[in-house]
Length: 431
Image (cartoon, rainbow, N blue to C red; front, top):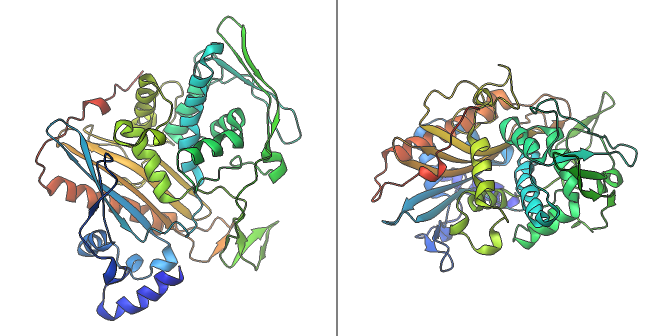
């Protein structure tokens, strides 16, 4: 962040905020052979595009305050419909921490499907009955799920809830099934070195309690035991870090005038989140090392519920407190109806502690538009954590909504040599 502040001060003289040094400005260069990716060399493209819109000036004028990071991937197709990617970034800095919140649910959901495939010889499937027991203090059992037609908890249903409305309990159950060792070793093995997914969400547990995961059992529809997994304790050593942010935090109703410690909180960098999304949507376009162990049915299942509106789901069903765009922050700002059925967003968002993040693949089937866009912004003007006074509605959501619209408008206007065949992403909704 010191470098960003220094550059801001220098470039303010010429009224161009947030750009990197001229030495970085160069023509895009090819990534390693076979990747199909062009890596952009600077922030210039995105910065100029956002400046021209006139919608982002206060944020662009103070990048250190808002900790904005953006990654945009332009997709062009060959005559054989093979995707070619050109990446552009704005202020992307792997060392600049943001709390990933619910975005960590995406890799955990994908790893849960991968783990089921690894255990297929036991008869386990995503639809198997999934019983969670309590083995230690702080653990919560689950024996039924009223959101399913027959009341059975399943991995598939937990993933539906995660993708539709970002359900925290559903994530916790998958975290307990996999355990932090499996999650982090798998992601590190895929090259996602920033990943540190080490705790449940929306429950107050110690580090020791989060290292201890519940005993779980799986049954088929006849009640036959398929798999019994005992309570486990993670002994994995986490990378040491010192992540202190803000001016204070609320504790027991009082403000503590000291930075809030995120050192033992989940971590996932924006480049790794963006790469995970890319590998999910375009597995054949990334190295094998980056691919999750999913079947074609798994991919279609995830695509369907990533892009489905809550109102289109029957099991689970949601009332009007979950609008169609509830989980669609980019382009829609998390509210309203999805008016154009041609536009679908395959995404995972997260918000907590004043950090707002979304990673999305945005498609317009009628107009042949597709692009990847990931962004994070810090919305905490008083720099106090846990006080529930965050600037989501006034800063973060408008920023993400406008960012999505500006890139969508750019994509709609730009010429394409080959119109993409987007049929693999056309899903059937309604149940």
